[in-house]
Length: 420
Image (cartoon, rainbow, N blue to C red; front, side, top):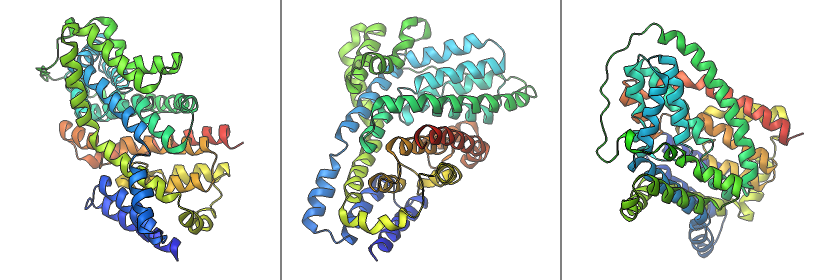
């Protein structure tokens, strides 16, 4: 009976999020409390173990996300992002496909560090550049979104989330990230080959690129500053510097290289605005921490173990089919979305030991590729679709085939590596 009630709770909150009657930042912690309650957990334990202790369980990951957002703001405020985009456009010359490729590389480069809608809007200056050189408007939006997701594979702030949630070593996360990025890059190359035929049928038209009042012109940003977005990756991956420290070092270097006389003002502003950028993500992670604690309650695990354990996820074929073919269920904050209701499913799989931790990581990161690009409820999807003049559902329709393919291929490689 307890298992049935928990499933009903999952379904109710999934419906509330899909219909947008309750945001994930409220639905996830509410679900955690309800799951603990139907498992007959005493009120005192719910308040102490689920709410209080759960809310700080991912505290280290909150700080990683904040530190990454601070560096992201430095990259935007000092003109590094704008400079990288403009240099990429100049390198492409007047060839639409070359411009599209170089700009996508620049966008992916930036989103190894950047997070939040503010970063999407700032880096969105790549869109009018692509359109002005002859890339169709809708295609520009799709290419921008694909590049964003490719760069986000290496966003070490998100690696911190995976590390804290699934207890996985960062080195293992980096190894699968390289595999996933390779598969994703191949899919983008195939997409570009198909899209290049569309480009040849369009002429170029002028689109004015607005200057940002808070950024400096490209010529004022030293070339070495363009390396700032990947400084944390280098420090953490090569020199084993802790993630938070790597982000802070990157932010300080970014200001020292571009605006040394404004060090205090730039860092202070970046800290405040960066916190604003990631506040929704931090609040959601607080709820995820509560759900983490709720799903580890003995009564919850015992009730759901027979139900979830009936699926043999350790079979490579079932593993690929289950997460690959069902990956669209990550859309609309659905049951496989790790930033919504899906986190409960993944945590139960972890707690019931239905998959090796690294196989579960591969599943989550692969499914996230579908969610990051195809979910119409993503703020980046809504902004990009409005900017290029298309319905947000069109972004989903144009990309879902490619991203599900990426997910299935990555899962196949993950099964070969982790489930042999």
